[in-house]
Image 1 (cartoon, rainbow, N blue to C red):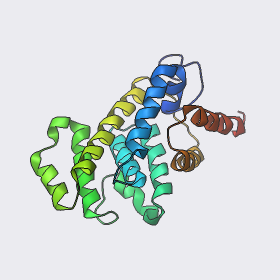
Image 2: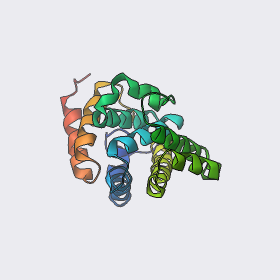
Image 3: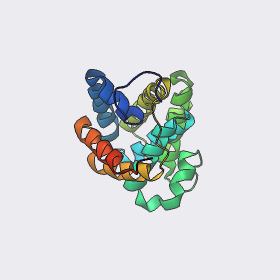
Image 4: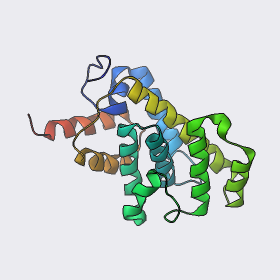
Length: 195
């Protein structure tokens, strides 16, 4: 049960989006911008960054949701995705993405933890200024999202199939329409067996 009455039964950040429409829309717009907006990083790469930062922040709802979306967007990774999210990107992703994940991990600790040599290492692997910028924004945004989700004690689904279904939905639809996200979750909740 959430720390406050969210007046809905949606899990994670979806419950927060529906609790207060003005901030919910802003959160959805931010997620859409950093995860699906124009970037030379693919949506799949940005979902990996989001999942990794969320895992470091121990935000179960966010890391599991975004790992599922990353899995849908990066089918070539197969079983290799989970080790990346858990911190071992050594073989499954490009050296450029490995270096960007290191920057994201530093942002998760503190923005000041990112050093010129981290940026230099990413550039040496072919990362552009825009890709470094977008990595930092995804990592910072997910520190914010994770703290909102966990700070308000939002609901975490105990049915693991929920994440696979939501990952497919998020990979296809993105984050730009909170009403569509709410309908997806409402339909999902109506289908679950009654206790």
